[in-house]
Length: 156
Length: 293
Image (tube, rainbow over all chains, first blue to last red; front, top):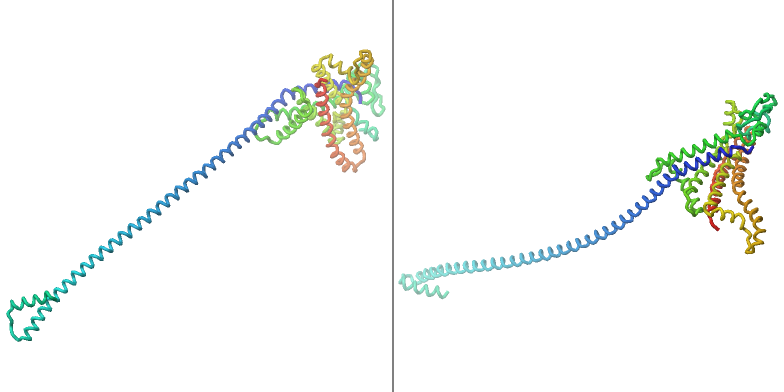
């Protein structure tokens, strides 16, 4: 355990190692560490920005969704109104058509009744004449009778 | 290999020393066999502790230096490799580990040292990793590499550089030189001398101040000198003691296995802690050197 020139050798070695470390080891490692630190900071910044943008976009989405819903509601209301209108119109038309048909039918009925009445009247006149002939047993003056019968018929 | 316990321990605690033996030195090996007398000054490896002592200051602990430099190269290689491929993407396994260490060291430096100095952080990183690797050699079973070395004819092989006070002193004296360099650079020569002589006692009276200067100088000088000495001896003492206990455990036969394991686990803590303390104190001392009173 003698103290000897080993000290000098060790000192020289130490100086060389420290110099090398200072020159070629420490700076690149620190550079890499600092660069990474910066990268991470940038990444976090970007993430925060992205988050904010996402929030904004979500807000916008909600807004547009609300607008779309409102518009859809409007359209539905309009459609409902229109459908009610169509139904009303249809009802109205149907009613008119029904009235028209009813009127036509009534006219028909009346016409038919009149015609029947006319037929009846002529038949009744003929019957009356025939009945009268038979009752009287002789031929009456055709023309005078006819006038008579016609008067009679008109009275019916 | 040595035979008795004390020889075994002595063998394990002896560094492989390369130095100059003076002319006329009688070489005797560990078993008392005479190897002859040197006719002239000879640069050689010491075969015994006595020879290592005889070599004086101008000798080198080749094993300490070899392992220390090797581990330094290991550290530099790993970190340089990572530094070269360092990317800002997701770090892989090794890059992750290295970045963790670098960030830990950077955090320690930032917490303690508030000035601007591009040297402190790499210095702290080098000290932490290098000392950590040197300490870590303590966990290699004590007989493996020395045994291998003996098999190939190398008489001594101490593989934990931080159990050699020369190595720890080499580190701490380098730090000490930096302390003085920065003290003078920041405060100027006058400021540095003032710091050594005008604290902690001072007086507005010039006469009293003149008397106080030597007292201050004594106190401050001891404080200053204590920094590298304590730095070196703390690391050396801890690692030496740990190593010694590993050697003692290795002497107890098969019972050494659980003991060795237990001590090794505990030693992991010491290894890391001592590396951290060395680094931390270096930062603190250099930070003090930068402070202007």
